[in-house]
Image (tube, rainbow, N blue to C red; front, side):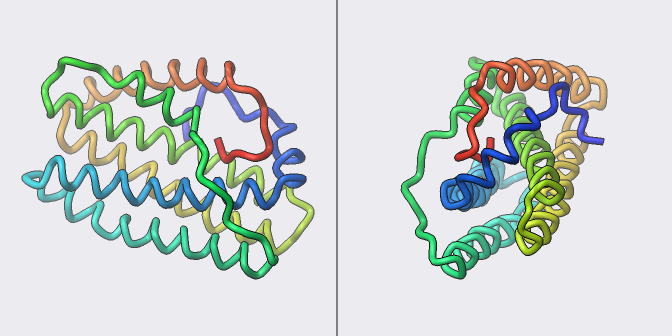
Length: 193
């Protein structure tokens, strides 16, 4: 369904389980950044009424997810650590085209956001099926379902504002880019991506 070209290394779940505090910290900041990304898109394209109306509730939802992860950390007597660079996301945004119109840039931003949500959905699915802690499996199952909806929303918004063929071509380019990024990253259990 997600169309990702390279699945996550199966070792990742076991590594993540051993680094729960770090993974929850990274997850919290990922949710915070997702909320910020939606705010940024709204600020950049306020004239795109449907984009604004569709993303405004996602801002609230992603911030709610941040708070859920904070609550899980607290419940487990764990601390929110410092935010770290997200190599995966940074590399995706390095592939955003330069010297293009603001509209074309919007396409790249929407598709990069869709990719991040798709990869997060895939990782949450792995956690929901592979963790030994049943409570954490259920916790991540809910996040998986939410991320799948966000992935579809970003793709849908891209198709609303751009011809299907243009979206398809650029999406396929990003899928290849993302595959190469994933292949080049070290498998680490202390990061969501």
